[in-house]
Image (tube, rainbow over the protein chains, first blue to last red):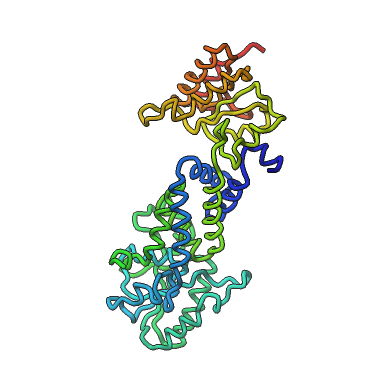
Length: 205
Length: 205
């Protein structure tokens, strides 16, 4: 045991756990210490449960062969459902985006989950996002409308533009979800970018 | 796979992982989902590392036989160090409190970690906090000063009072760390309770 560890009253296993917990998104050094000590002091059963759930999910969860979302089967529940409309394909960046749309309950078509966005500086091109698989879906002929639901960021917009061009070149109708003032939003508190978008996207009533 | 799970585009293993991650302090449903998806989408190596670190720490980390702090030996590094002053015993509520004091580097004595505070409504009495072990330390005769560093809450104060009485009845000098305006604190922004404490604790200069 080194002098430093003696000084701060901790141990190598606790330090290792703190380091590991910092891989969780949004967890810094203080948060990781709080989590590690909480689990070891008061919730060893919880610690065991987390370790088991991680091992279980790592063994079970794979990517859907069709839409790339996380699933435990070859085809996910959405892709294999006879109740979904196979003529619509919605492009999202992440499983969390897909879950948000499903929870809103407004869409009955299929998805493709890119697991990211185009980012050439990070070496993320069309291949890394599985865009050739989107083209293969277009080529199957059942997709009549492509709905672009990537994020409203520079990279999200570039990704939407790229996939949109591939659809348009095949004469597939291409739409982008609407961006503007959120429902219940008060103009006074809405940021300038959103207001600009709401104006440029205004429609006849 | 149930209808609900199909609806939201998730899987039983992902849901199980989300449930497990909610046992981490400060992690709610949204945070747990973000963590679960991040690990499964982008950091499976991190997920494996967290599971392994948890298992390892659960197997290794025990309580110090003397001070009750978390350790990997029978006696922790502080209790077994010949450089620490065995005549001073500092009472803290948690390992995190001990770590904070060690990092401040102002104390060279020993500790006792209560792993909580007296809370009769939750069934936490002197036995549950290991206070009979503190009495046994007093009875060994080497402790000349008891330093109370429990938190400045109703329960922390009650706990300090209880342990302090045990020391005083054995004629052991008993002190409480000072509470008042923090270093660098501006009076304008200090809360009333702290100001009251700073006044009642004022000293001759």
